[in-house]
Amino acid sequence: MRALLLAVLSLPLLAAPQEDDSLTWLDNYDAAIKEAKATGKPIFLEYRCEP
Amino acid sequence: MSQYVLVRTIRMDNVDIGLFEHDRNNTLYFYLMNADEQIYMRYGGRDSAAADTYLNLDSLAVALGQGLELHEKYKKSELAKAPRPKPSFPREYSLLVERTFAKNQCVECHLIGDYVNLHREKDKTLDKMTHLYRSPDIKTIGIYLDVPKGLVVKEAKAAVAEAGMKAGDRITSVNGTPVWTFADLQHYYDKTDRRLAKTVQFAVDRAGKSETLTVTLPVRWWYYDVRYRQSSVDPRLYFESRPLTEAEKKDRGLPVDGFACEVTRLDSFGLMMKSHELKVGDIVFGVNGVERDPYAHTAELYMKLNLTPGDIVKLDVLRDGKRIQNTLTSYRLSFRK
Image (cartoon, rainbow over all chains, first blue to last red; front, side):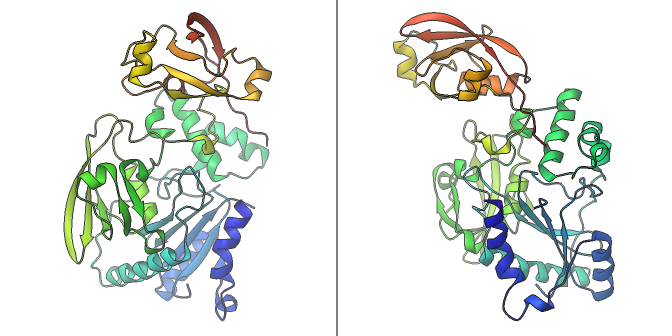
C-alpha cells in the first residue's frame, strides 16, 4: 500500500516529462534553508517514512 | 515544482518536532514554507479508510500555486508571521531514545507519535479523546470535499448543512485560522476542545463572498475508527461491538443512558491470549460496576478511553438473557522491530 502510494505521488511529480531531470531533491534541511535564502525560492519539504 | 527548493526527510532524528508538529500517522506529509521557517501551509492528511483519501496531484498543484502567492506576499513583507512554537526534539523523549537512538534504529514518524503519547501516559497528561482520537474525521460533521479542488465542498450534510454550508463553498478558515489545504483543515480542526467546545466556526468563500458558519458539534464528533494507528496507548480488548439502541436497552432492562453494547466480532489473537471469554452476541453493560459515561456510547469505547493497557477489569454481561460476569485482560501492542 505504501509503495503504491509513494509511486502514485512521486512518479508524476518526480518523473514528469521534461521536469524530471531538472528537479533536484535535497536530503538535508539546513542545506534547503541555505539554498532558499540564496535563491529566494520557497521550500517544499517532504516527510516520508523510510522505505 | 521547479519554483521551490525541494527537500525530503526520511529520518526524524534531528527534526524540530515542535515546529513540524503534525499527526505522525501519515505516510507522507509536506510543508510549504520559506527560509525563515515560516510555514505557509501543510499538505497531506488522511482518514481511517485509506492513507491517500486526500492525496491528489490536482489538489497538490492548487496548493503549490497558493504557496507561491503567499511567498510573494512574504517577500513584500505583507505576510504576518505567527510566533514560532517551542522547539522540541525526539531526543527529549527517553523512551523513544531507548527504542531507537540507543539501538541505532530509524526514528520513524509513527514512533514519535506513539512515544510522545507513552510519555503523556507516564506523566498522566494523556487525554485519549485528544491524543489517540487525533485528526477527527470531517465527514462526521458532514464535510465531503471535492478532493482534486482542495477545500471546495462537494457535498455538505448533517451538522455543517444545518449551519448553512453548501456544495461549491471553499473553506477558508477554521475557528479564525486560515486554511489552504485539507491538511491545514484537519490540523486546525483537531485543535477543537473535545470536552468544552460546543461549536466550531468555519469561514467559506461562496462565489467570491465570505460567509461565516457556526457549526454545532454533534455528540462524539471526535470519535472514529482509529485502528489504523496501531497505537500502544490504545488497550487491546480483542473484541468489537455495536451500541445498543434505546429500545434494545429498554427491552433488556438496561439503563437507556448506559453504554451497553453487543459483541459483534472476536479477535482470534485475543482467544489465544485468553484475554476474555466473551462470545458474539453477548451484551456488555458494565465495566468494574460502571454502566454509563458522558463520552462513551459503548463499553468498548469506555475501556479504550479509561484503561491503561495491561489493566484487568470485571465485565457485566448479558448472555442469553442471563447476567454473568466476565474478566477481561487488556494488552499493550508491542512493535515487532
